[in-house]
Image 1 (cartoon, helix red, strand yellow):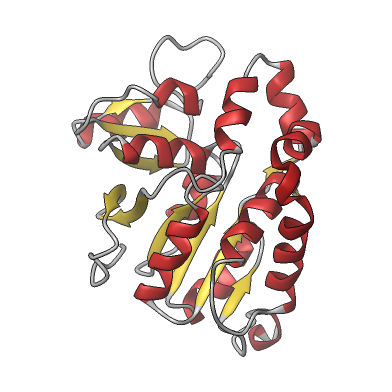
Image 2 (cartoon, one colour):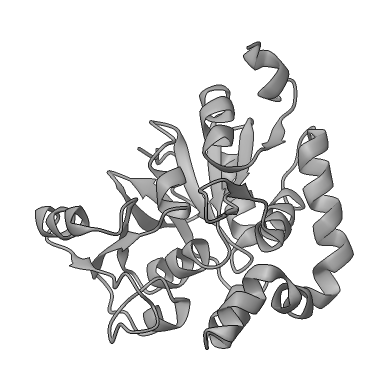
Amino acid sequence: MDHSIYNQQEFDIRLEWGIRGVEELAPVSDVVIIVDILSFSSSVNIATEKGALIYPYQWKDETAIAFAKSNNAELAGFNRRYTQGYSLSPSSLLSIPKGTKLVLPSPNGSTLSLATGKKSTLCGSLRNARAVAKYAMKLGEKIVVIPAGEKWSDGSLRVAYEDLIGAGAIVSYLEGKLSPEAQAAKATFDASKNQLLESIKACSSGKELIARGFEKDVELACELNVSRALPLLTDGCYKRVSMSDSNALGS
């Protein structure tokens, strides 16, 4: 396979979906922005804004317990419906204390975050779209935005409307030559930005969460540019950095 056909390397601002997008485009980019609106990215934004440290972890199994212990961290609940503590639900993290170390298992956002290698990696959402874009441009010129998408029951990628919108929001604040894929995401955001909450509530992922009793999580995820928190992946965890920390490198 000719990777140069698929990696959008002739453009400054690139966009591709899921794990294959990371594998193809991260090696030729300076900065990777992971976008998983419902709900990993929104949860990471809220938690790091409060001063917590978020350790992404791929698996929701016994190995997550051992991983949390090895990092002297708490483990978020696997099932947001039944947990009494922290979980992948953004609303469960609204009062997380500063300095809390939390392992956040996620088959989408965490998996992608851990696949970027040594590239500077940011976690982007609608909540911090403008801030993340501005900071990414301080870290490098070649930027790839990775909408996570969801998974069908057979494990295949389901292109998720909310992640396309979130990626497009971030792209709209980035400067440089946009790939056609990035342009398409921006156009989708531009067409929907005046009705973000309504459209995301009506999309498949939004309807799923609302049906499960998590309408508040959808509402939190749809708050555009309410946060300046910049979650940068550093030493295996997302930490909040400031705009002045432009020399920081992700891991």
